[in-house]
Structures are given as structure tokens and as C-alpha cells.
Length: 486
Image 1 (cartoon, rainbow, N blue to C red):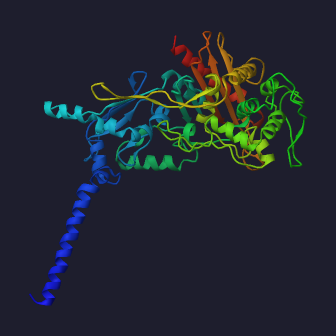
Image 2 (image 1 turned 180 degrees about the vertical axis):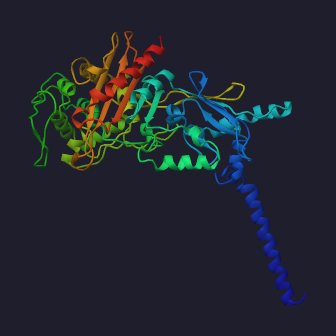
Image 3 (image 1 turned 120 degrees about the vertical axis):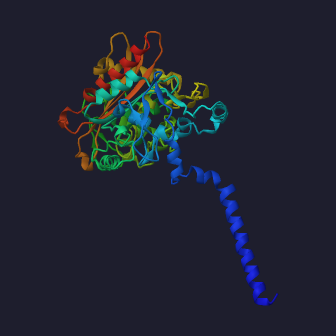
């Protein structure tokens, strides 16, 4: 063979070798990732080839499937009371994909999860069509309805937790959307989704998990915990030696109060009347490092809190002295999700033990075999049991005689904290109304802790308060949980 032909043969051989390597790389190394790639159209076709399994609340399905109008997709998703449940389920749309539980538990719902292999093999041998499994949530339907109806046409969110386990009992966000309106693949579905995305009121934003707000005076519970844990106060009924107004450290600005006679107030009275001066001074006394440490015990500054839907990070910041004093009353750069503030109330109610929040109790196969069960998990001991009892005493005083009296429930001990959080440049925007609380029954158990935030742009500025707008919603949610256990 002459030299030019030999070179051509070698070159062709290298091309064939490269083709073999590439082919094997795609078939064996990349096969799994390509098969599950969201851009692979076959994935979505398979997702809607059979009816999806259901998401379950209180033993009943809140989802379903119907025949689809699409040529490639045989079935599309439906929801019962979609607007109420969208913050829990997310959506599953033939045109835009899936989010939240519909996405995270897609393998179970479609029946394609590896853990269903044995079940699917038996069905194949018997000629039975493959069926999706079900996702059993921790949600309480009555509590969810109370939260959703309580928010009504206001912007806001509600989160209710079981303090003992961390189970999410309610997760409401308004305004909301109905996932059924864009579950298909038609032009109308696409137009509906586009309109929702562009809506200035952000109905597709999960405010309960994914929006952070200045927590306002509800954060004073955390500051009180830091003061007790670090010895900044010796007893909740001792005078705090606080001036009124309080001059912020290293600043010419004064911190004032909206309620009560706060000069030298006790910690109990300061929480009852929401004295800014007392808690601003205590935050400075404890110091920024210790305030961060205490906040993190309650769940702040955690970037990977999964419920399994990931929550936005709540932040207690590193800051200078005057800003740290303001952060101690829930202002400055202090930011929290409604979930985070429900966790604060939950930890206090549970004698200081903070449980990890979760909303999926079980995953089940189509024949109801249990594939996975969630075990409650402790996140931290946020505060000592002794100091948790003191915080309970103070939060119960807030509801008995302080700013949270609208949350009182006959025959039930309720602890709470109101908050009115300023926001906007120079606080020019209307404030957010907050309320966090827990209910304690006569047997000493605490079945529910709640956080409510309301963005009521239609209310008069002077009428916006946590006690007025948010506390009644929290009360109705707590009552719903208590009544469901009777």
C-alpha cells in the first residue's frame, strides 16, 4: 500500500474509532441522564401516557387525571380547589413542565420510580397497565381551608406546623392560581400561563415558602430568647433599665415605641406591648455574633431547608451596632419567610426543640403498599426547656392582656406575638401585618403553631396591625386543627 493510501486508511480508522467511542459514551455513560433530561420530549410524553397517581390530603385525593386533547399526551392533570392547594402541590403542565410536589415526586406519581420496579414487573406479567403511586401529605384540609379563606383577597401567607413532629398542617399563599387552567398543551394553556407569569400581583409566587419579609415585632421572641440564653436579663419580670426613647448605639437616631409605657419595662411587659426600645437595647447588649447564633438555632441563615420543596433562606445579618439593634426588633436587613416564623413559634411551644418541617408523610405504590415513610427529625434545641417555658409565659401574656387578644380561644391556652413590619424606602410603603402563635390544650399538648403575614394594600395605614389583620386568621387556623382532633 502506498503512503497516501495508508494515511487515508489510518484517518478513516480513527474516525470509526471515534464514532464507536461516542456511540458507547451515549449508550452507556450518558444513557440515564439523557433519558431523564427535561429537554427530552419522550420524558414528558411518558409522564402523561397514563393517569398520574394522586396527592392525598386527609385520606382524599386533591388531584386527578382526564383524557387530554393533545396528540402525544393521553392524559392531563386536574386539581380539586386548585387555587387553595397550588402552594402545596405546584403544577404539572404539558406545556411548561412541573414544579413542587408534582415535580419532586414525579417518579412516584408516574410509576417510574426505581422503587416501583417490582410492582411494575408484576403488573407487566399479569397484563395490568402501569399505574402511578400516591403522595400522602401531612396537610390538614380544615386548617388549609381556614388559612385560604382567612386571607381572602389579601396578599399574604399562612403556615401551620405540628410542633411535636414538624409536620406542615397548612400552607396557604394568596393571591393564588388554578394549575388546571394551563395543564394541557393548547395555545390557550400557554396564554394563561404567560398571563399568570406577568401578573403584577405574582399569583405564582409561593409566599409561604419562597418570599422573605421583615418579620417586625414577631422577631422579638427570638431576641427575648437570646437575652435569656445569654444572661442579658435574669428574670422576665425584672426591670430592664431601658430609657424611652432609646438612642441607637453609635448613632444620633432615637428608637421610639408605638404602645405602652416602655421605660424600664420588664421583659414580659415589653413583649405584651411590643416595646421597641427594650428589644433594641437587648439586641445590642447580646451583640451581633450572639444574635446570629441564636437566630440560627431557630433556623435562620439555612440555605438548604427542604420540605421537600426548598424554602428561601431567612437571614439574620452580620451588621454594625445600630443596624443590629434594629434587626433585633425585626427590621433593618432581618428577613424571614412565613415558614421560618412558624418554626420560631413551634420551637417555643415544643419546649425549645425545633423539628424539621415536612409535608410528605408517605409515598405509596398503586396497590397502597408503603414505599417510604417520613420520620420526624430534630433540627436543633433552639432554646433551653427552662427558657422556653419563660417564653411561653410571655407569649401567653401577649394574648391574655397584650396586643394579641384577638387570638384568644375559649378553653385553650394561646401564646402569640404580633408584628407590624415597616418596609420600602424611608418606610413609605404600607407595613406588613404579622402574627405568630401556638395553641396549648388542657392536657398540656400543643397541636399547632401558626405564622400569618398579610400584605393589605387596601387598608388604611393606621389600621394595619398584626393583632387586627393577622391574629384572627391564626385563630381560625388553630381552631380548625383543634376541632379536627376531637
